[in-house]
Length: 261
Image (cartoon, rainbow, N blue to C red; front, side, top):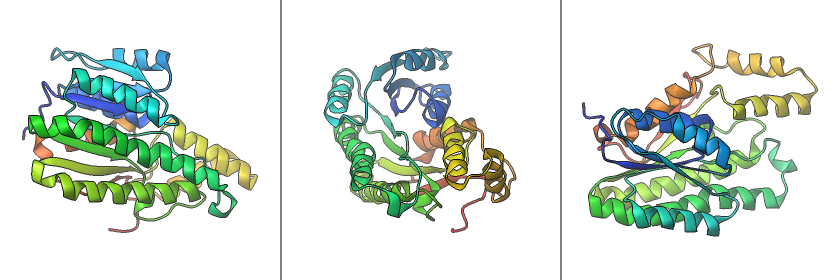
């Protein structure tokens, strides 16, 4: 099985922490040069320094805020001026939790811009290089809510579904060029995002956080929360040559929690 990414360049968004960093670590282990994008300089420096360099990989980072698409576009243009980007991992922090009826209209617009518009700008920037070099992988980190909506995540459920359909459409358009487009759907992974959801849920219901975490745990057939490295391994596989005939899919990494096929 060919898993080698030696000589490939990967842009990982939200790469300073959580599932973005976990994905970058696994992609780097396969030999890729990783270019991390996130908002804060200090965490980015630390994240880049933590990546494997045993195969001569060279890692770098750029600051950008997904609330500012124009600046993000400038950053990705600067990257593509210097490198062919073979792998793009689209990932940014999810919208705040809460019932859908309680959400302000602006929350949907902001989430649409951060998740779908920014993904579009990034894809438009990297696809020409992928076509020219004959290798391309575009991977979205989304949510299992694209298969079944999750309670108390109204805005997120809505926007994640839009991103999944965008990705499926793009997969069909890019398949003739050998560029794959896939979505990886995290379940309950042990990250700061999960802990923030526990807090928000507990506060809205007036119950202890451990009550919420125990309820969520009971719904997972494997009876444990996922380790970010397990999620990163799935992303890295889809980025590899071995996954060349897999495109347009939603891959849950959730310990069996999602009830649908």
